[in-house]
Length: 406
Image (cartoon, rainbow, N blue to C red; front, top):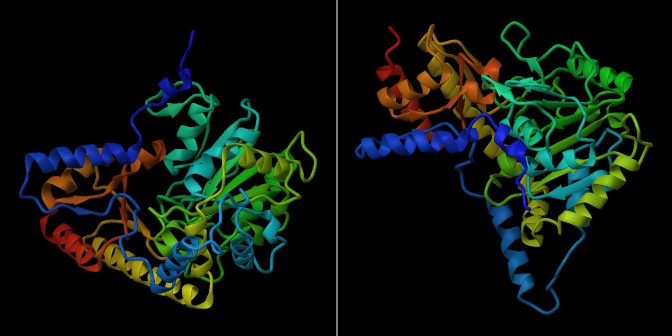
């Protein structure tokens, strides 16, 4: 008799972003003349840059010739791309053989769990990108949820009081999820803050899953862009990153995971975790599209990097416009200086989803309720800087003129 994975039934609600789309669609159907501006999902909006388009086009043309055609490639990724990504880690111990190319950070964030025991205790920043929690629920590592809080999951609250970076877990945990720059709060961990977690992980033989998908947006050079800038991180940390936001590959799909030889956990030797991840990828994954990987190579050549820099600057200017507009209204806002998200405190007495409805109804602007990222997100709201400039400016104008705060 076939049976389902009952852990799916534990999921507290629908995945956050489809729920936002559902509510937005219902409002649009009820108000067909409303011009809705979307600053909710962190989906890039600007077109691919010329260098990337050339790289993709050349790859397609090459596949149309007998000499240039290629079939299956290495599941770890093509050599030129792995070398290009490794250059981003210059000054650390990371080399090309540590790089595993994927179809995006989101899938790797959940797939990486398969090489670890199902009875590991999981700790997550709270609020956090929903896939960290939901994928562990599906994998059977939690109990049921009570008011959105899962039994057996260790929440590490990120609040205004601690600068939206958590304290160390008060108990022993096995796998720790950290995202910096953080989605949704926009906060960036300092060297000292990450060092405390690395030291904890080494002492407790734990693993840190470090999401650095937004590292390219860090403007302050004193802040770490990779966990491998931290002493000892190569012994305990796996880093996951992406081309999605840096060069607009949200729909193109390309990312990578870094698994150093030295990384170990309680019952493994150096090199074993890397071998397990290699085996997992060889078994379940045939590698990212060779066309897309050619686009990634192009993104990392000198011209591609310059275009990436310009694109990042564009989105960060959007973030500045949003944050300054909110601040002028007297709304407390965080982030937007080293990350493309602005994290705002909802007006007193208004919940996150209530504010979602209020912003949609009064301003026809879509954002993301903080409660959707975890219990500590209640009372906060995220606005994304990924948007056309005219739309961002219009959204801020509407909020300034139409949002009823009194």
